[in-house]
Image 1 (cartoon, rainbow, N blue to C red):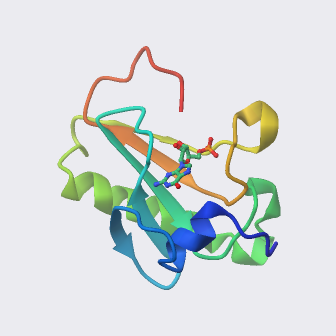
Image 2: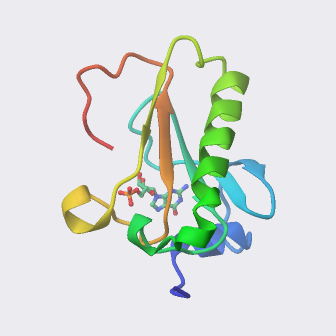
Image 3: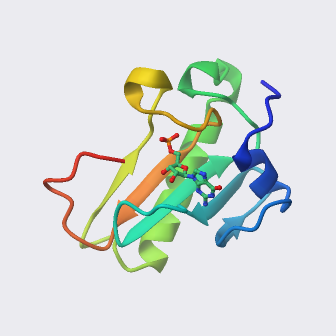
Length: 116
Ligand code: 5GP
């Protein structure tokens, strides 16, 4: 659970990124290769590698990620137009970075876009 990833370095501000929100539990930054006009990553500061690795007693982090997604969507004024939240898990799920994260995609119609 302590593997260093690019996201760990972003959390520690060792690598530059476009940070939109940060508190002790969660950071939000813009995806470096956006798949939609708005593409943010909502990332727990604790480096759970995947969804599989969140212990039951820490599952509250998922609620917090959703609350931050709500807040970001409202701030970006896409809460009513709509957006997509995606969490990929492991290889078949298309997960590239082994540090749990939620994609927030929006700012355009994504009906025919299944790729994150
Ligand atoms: P995954 O495929 O693991 O669900 O998503 C990983 C996401 O992280 C990808 O959308 C990718 O573009 C993004 N990403 C990878 N490296 C970096 C980076 O160094 N900075 C930022 N901001 N995003 C990154």
